[in-house]
Amino acid sequence: MAGNTFGQLFRVTAFGESHGGAVGCVVDGCPSKLSISIDDIQKDLDRRRPGQSSITSPRKEEDKIEILSGIFEGKTTGTPILLLAKNKDMKPEDYGKLKDLYRPSHADLTYEVKYGIRDWRGGGRSSARVTLAYVAAGAIAKKYLKEKLGIEFLIQIEQIGGIKIKTVQEMTKLIETIKNEGDSVGGTICGVVKNVPIGLGEPVFDKLSADLAKAMFSINAVKGFEIGSGFNGTKMRGSDHNDSFFVDSDNKIRTKTNFSGGIQGGISNGEDILFRVGFKPVATIRKRQETVDKNKKTVVLEASGRHDPCVLPRAVPIVEAMAAITIMDHYLRHKAQNL
Image (cartoon, rainbow, N blue to C red):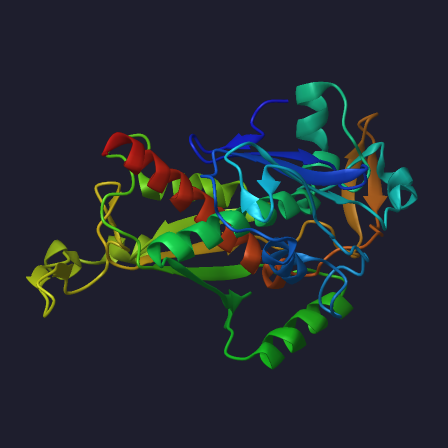
């Protein structure tokens, strides 16, 4: 199966399945002598892991990361870094009755037609379980970018369903209501990346905005992505939308507004990078649904298993990680091209 590696110079190759032995990744291209500990990675994995509250999947995984190569005496060596977390709370038997069905809005049919075989244990490779690898790799990228460039990532839930979220209590109450109904709900995560230098990205096919979009669409359940004004910009006139330049008190060229979202012509302009990511409702729900089986017969599905009623609480560190991996890759590419 191709398509398991993201990035050109900072390359992340992810592996594993939902109910396989382990999930993890190989990070290649990380500069040497960066101080990295297990705690640096684990703290982000703990934000993503399931079983932490009533509004997430009850699957109990510790997600304890192991560093098997690429780090010596607490520092990166410049060689491939192998990160691995073993699956512990596996219950493939929960999915046995689903192996001959095609679950609505899942990858069951597409995978089986494409490859002639599929791992039906919780979705196999298409499971959000594999995003653990993204978060682990992203923790390394974030630390490098913070220490070397002062880049910061501010990612938060903006909206769940049609409701703007103002407090954790509001979010929890809404998701618990949806869960009790046997249903699911989507929403929007917004991101701000601060202190990104001018010059990251390429002007045509490898625009920084394009690669950020690709990174976000690699996350399970993502259905939308926008930079800056996004689709709201389509309702504006150029005279209102243009970001006028000025010279600030530090003699730096800045923009008065930021409808571009920190990226112009595919290249970062030094302003905050602003983006939104839209997530669809989780496909697995407890409500009865009609579908078909391998024999093309209509059947009624009442799904079981352990699933999130809303992915957004656990998706925040995943979005953060994919943004960091993208910017890290483009920073190294920029330095290689412009010595």
